[in-house]
Image 1 (cartoon, one colour):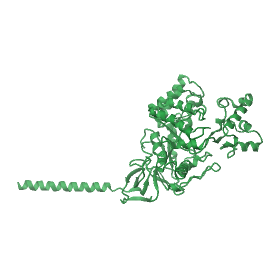
Image 2 (tube, rainbow, N blue to C red; image 1 turned 90 degrees about the horizontal axis):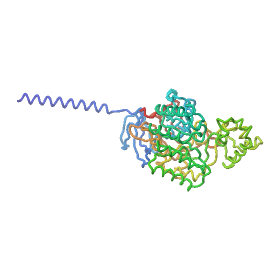
Image 3 (cartoon, one colour; image 1 turned 90 degrees about the vertical axis):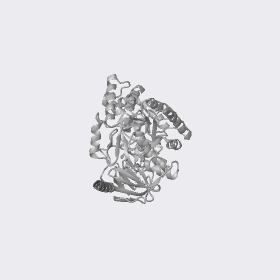
Length: 517
């Protein structure tokens, strides 16, 4: 009996030692040295909820730990004192332009806190049948920001052979559908349409609805530059998009009402959108905080003067008619002084100034010196009270509709302007709601499952800044001036901007829908 008790005691001792050893090993494993400790930050997490104080720890490209006990200490390669600063997710620009192969640095976006941009807008995406090839090329170059790509309907029309056909043959339509499916399978987040531009303006609802079924089946999103944003036609254009919304989530790009005036008109448009949501439709929009748009000068020309029509023949045979059309169109759009040319030899001058310099009517300048594809321009045609109504809607997020080269202050200042003008000065938005519109809401809308919020396990795209010091420096006269105040920017766990210094190493890549990075 004594031997049995002794054996039991020995066995118990051995088990205790084994447990102690295992416990020690476990404790040793739990000692993690983090890459970055952001200490005592006021966390505005992207949900719109009240900020809280926390230590946020980064390991590799991920938010590894969020600890609201700010007295805790952790081993970290670098500690950043965030006292007096807010920590937010990196901003997500739902409607951007640019070529990451030609201009991968994207300093304009990083300087205003944008860490992810959505490309392929207004129906125009890279001119590749296999978009995976383009994505791989971008990853090889490594852009400074993350890129979420959409397939452009207009580009797919040209690649498929549909081109400028109003009603595609069934063979061409099948080819168009296959290109869209391939693009979505390659990792595109959906499809964009630019129904104000050729060749997409020739598309009918039957074609658009067929494509919407494909986007919806692939859990994508349709972003649409509406067919017409003029006050008299914008509601009909929205309803055309709502037809597609029966099959897929839909999104109004850079929502605006050209010629419209006043808060009440803005509310009428919002009521139309709310009614669609009440019926169960997934419907969102984005907005840039300026009253001048920017796009190709072609929007001032009639359809019959654009591709595939021969413009020189139009000048020969319909010159007087074109002159009259341009007179009426530009006069209605607040006159030649309200069109600021942004590219080409007349860049930086209004149409009125060019007319005076060349000593000829502005209509003749448009016809003979610029033409439908000779320039881009800024157009001062929106009403501040109406547009600001859109800004406050909880389903509308923020975008730039800008690029590194575009001559419009929105390209360099949109996100800074939201914080400086609409949060700090006008107090139209709270900081929490503004950040939600720039982070969590776009992430949910696009389908970015691990970005847009400050949460454990999410990617470490982060900003640290004092909201009171954020400043937009870009103007219409000098649009290529970097925003100020975002003194700490991280992309995928790496510091890419500190103070005014942008790092040479680029840390972004192409985000692909359905692919875990």
